[in-house]
Image 1 (cartoon, one colour):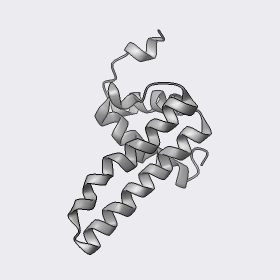
Image 2 (cartoon, helix red, strand yellow):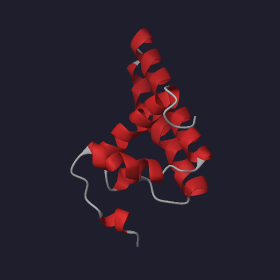
Image 3 (cartoon, one colour):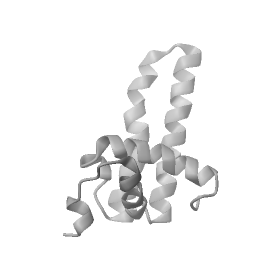
Image 4 (cartoon, one colour):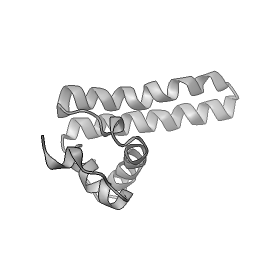
Length: 105
């Protein structure tokens, strides 16, 4: 078992390089982007239309795409299982980094 999988991260800054390593497959990363953008779209729709039941779809949209990416393409377990808060933060930072050109889209 790799050392990273048992490591405890004290800060998000320590965690993020590990997070990016766990998302090295382009298709996995792109599925994360699709899920995150779908989450934003559903959230926006729910707020504009005040149809709050749409909020129930958020975890399925976000995590569904991401987990397919991990299990099918990356062939690893999502970091969400061990580091839920840092992983959630990582999704949004990775999307921002893709849009700003810091990492491959």
